[in-house]
Length: 203
Image (tube, rainbow, N blue to C red):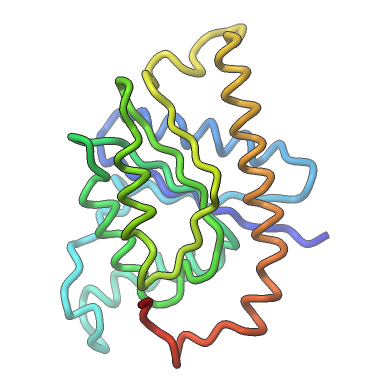
């Protein structure tokens, strides 16, 4: 069985972010899978992606050169976990900008699981926002299952783990299992049928 690569995209740029902590927790879960899975980690705080502008489409532009190594890393992934904090009830603008930058097939027809992060009892609006507009021209394929981790500061911090930690971990593993197996199943379909030259924009 060939090894799959799952990209974890951490959508927070805070120095000490709960999204980053959860990203590392999910990384550990994926690395413990029985089937061979490797993880590519994309922390937006470290990447410092500039705002998209039309120079992205011009050969030899500074922004195009900046993006290429990130693009290559994304293209090497078979699926993604997108960790999205809730900022004022919205997905952060830098995460939406990152998804906008992915117009070169990096994410196209690859499965992705949303994990929304809330310090309170919210988290639903970023999920709806990403599902509505976070996929159009990058063709990212959102999995039907998503997770909302509410009051996140209290999660996955106890030793031994709390009962809630156990319940949420089991649900994460359930969703990640579907993600990994969907990524495995979609790879040959994508290779056989994907035509981004003819159909480069969503409708």
